[in-house]
Image 1: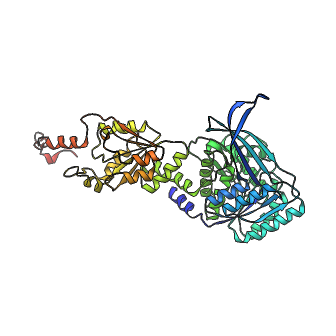
Image 2: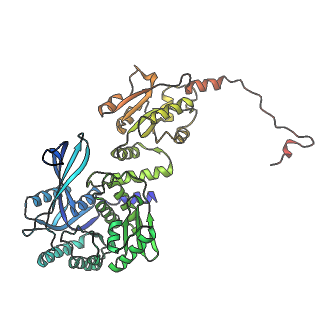
Image 3: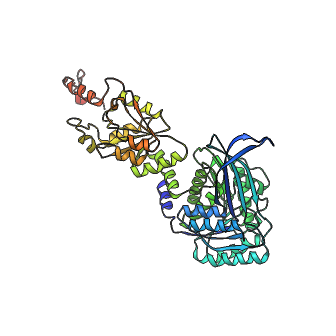
Length: 513
């Protein structure tokens, strides 16, 4: 399953998606919240940073571009300065903007967020200011937008509709798009607005509400998976859709494709930092996967991963192909062990650092694992949340002149033994005499060596400290080393082979099996 999903992700680049929806400009003002205003019981922000990002359907476009997908964007903006900024941001992303309409009759939808920074680092949104016009488009403008969408449809694999209920997505527009999409054999995927009536999405192939949106549209509380599936299938029938993909926060997602035909897609436990943009990430990955030829269940599994990665970030931050592949490798690793190549490990460590985890690195031959090794590795793990062990390959051990017959155990066996330790998260084999290049590529936050390296020049110290990391010299258990263990074994006296006991009246060959 994981290898199949990995192949799908690797095939996303170059697919084409038509995206229709509500374009939004997201503006952020970050400030240090240092005191309470004397005028009212509210924080005073001292502005330290201002920037803008694409939002709404434009954020879905950013998510698709991060996956390597080509995007034709259809929507409306005002004829204002915010529209210029939004156009520029889309151009930087490489989005095809030929489907955008500038209208004098409405402003560009803009959301300005004031974000307080406690102690200069802990982010908390304090206020959002919206500048928007949400009345439905005039029929003439809606007709022009529909014409643009229909013209673009011949050159795309999938059609996406992102509805933020800002007046762009109407039943007439969806109907016109869905009708042409059916004639062109293009699936139509819809991320719905928070509505109690889904009739505007009639003709869609897949609709992707979250749990709260589903409950609102169904008019009842959807608690258990069975209740969610029943509600989803009723809505699916009403809309005439092939499926509903319901995202369920910590519980993953549920794909409903017919009466008594539903699949629960679990997710691993995550630290939910911010739900903003999760629906956009889900729609983007679902569309990209379907465009690449994935079945709905495989596409839903990838969309579930993308949504899960998004909630671990602050604000709307597009999820890249590399992050999804790293997440799949994490899943593969949970199933297949801890051994990684340098390339695989680098991507996974980047993902784990983004989650705030601390990477610890140590290295060695670990030819015969003994109590000193176990103690050292356990204490290494206490220095952070992820322990990587660099393991000298067989050729590397031989180059170190450890003695005749070394290594005694092959690198495969040594890696297997290390992987069996709870304290070890990853094992990576290197061929060089020292781990300097490996350390440079993995960029650990903490480098641990034994206390016996004091004054000898720890390999990798410069690159770790240059990246803001630290070096720890760990005390060792006295008298324990692989060389000592091997020498004691060699000095043991040879013993006479033990002959099998022979019972009275029977030969050794007559013993029971």
